[in-house]
Length: 260
Figure 1: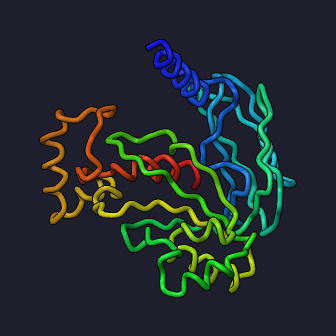
Figure 2: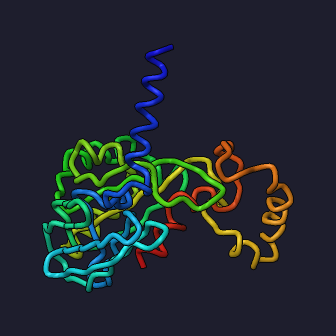
């Protein structure tokens, strides 16, 4: 029993350290070593720190500053950059965070069900593809599986990986072949953000307002709203509940407004 309590305290302490309430600053998990940032568009970097904390961000020749708001959130917008790298992304607050081997290129989101999930190791021509998958200019980010009835501030812990036979064999075959094609045709770094979940419904990746605007789909939302009192934002819910936005809430809903 004593060892169990120690384990629980340890897990609580670790969770506290990774909470957006901590004073580090802390960034979203989408930022890590080896990441790819979209070229030729404004670059938005965001995270959390103490309210009122001054944050400075630099990437290549670009730099910017922000002050954390009363909710502990901050965002810095850097000017667009051309293809290039590797760069160091440096964030300075009460401590300094450095992400290395950051590239500027093409970033694509791949999302779907079983077909998008299917790994290169099981695909037709996969064995040959794995042997040839030595592309340092291709990077993968896999969004961990999670559902929620309310928008989340971040994904679960994850990090970017450099394409190699070892990382490519377990990655989405469709996404890998897309990345390889773009990399060869455009001659630029390519990053794939993979958010997949076999057996899930399209509604789980769609916000309620979009469904409500369609007369055919509106009854789906009305049915959920009628039973909304049965589920709270922190309650455990089955992965196959097929409620609107349950997957969207854990990635795109919070990422897209900040990244664009």
